Length: 256
Ligand SMILES: CC(C)(COP(=O)(O)OP(=O)(O)OC[C@H]1O[C@@H](n2cnc3c(N)ncnc32)[C@H](O)[C@@H]1OP(=O)(O)O)[C@@H](O)C(=O)NCCC(=O)NCCS
Image (cartoon, rainbow, N blue to C red; front, side, top):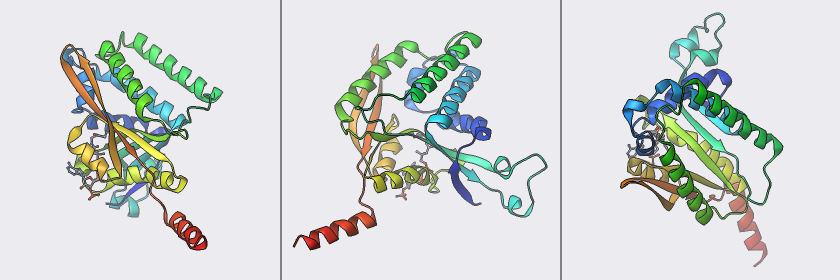
């Protein structure tokens, strides 16, 4: 079945949330931070992720992989249903724009962060808490992550940051993850920019990302009463694109 990578729309949000939640259910970081299954609230997590994805729609580059059933190619969508809605969402990636440390945060970005904070506060009130999130562990992770960022994210131009990448289980190993990454890394290569991501799944993710040009830059170790979670920070240097290579060759010829 044909799959295309397209920008996410508001109508995709419920399917995006479902795709992320399912893909990260066995993620070591997720299991470390939601450490008590008895306290876990799926509804609260859906509400929180929905707020986060809505933020991403307005502030990040959000792509979805959509499978179009062959029947849709012959049969038009039902009345009131757009073609996009009729196709099935099977993967997602969210990329944050580079933030050069020397540039102050814009008012728009400040407002959007504030709006996210308010939405999450409302979720806390509505669901009477964090839905099983271990708040102490959340802040341990945040502080270790900040230390790692200070040490390794030194490029003054900033980094394209992969905040979310997920492909539905039954659609894995068909090249979709690569497409959802390359849509951004190709642009980063054209602009000569670096990319960044984090993963707590050593196997198979670190090797998968190596195959896409990322290298491990830091091992973030989060520890709470002997229970350790490791998060692997990976950086990708830009590859020279063909026009850039041609330009470099012409310059080196001219300088001979
Ligand atoms: C990581 C993930 C997005 C990869 O998606 P995918 O669609 O399976 O990836 P692709 O099919 O494009 O594979 C990319 C490469 O990795 C390799 N690969 C994929 N899964 C692999 C596995 N389980 N073991 C070894 N190699 C694997 C593929 O062979 C391919 O290599 P190639 O392009 O050199 O042939 C997917 O496994 C996933 O959603 N995992 C759960 C959520 C998650 O961990 N997200 C990442 C958080 S940072």
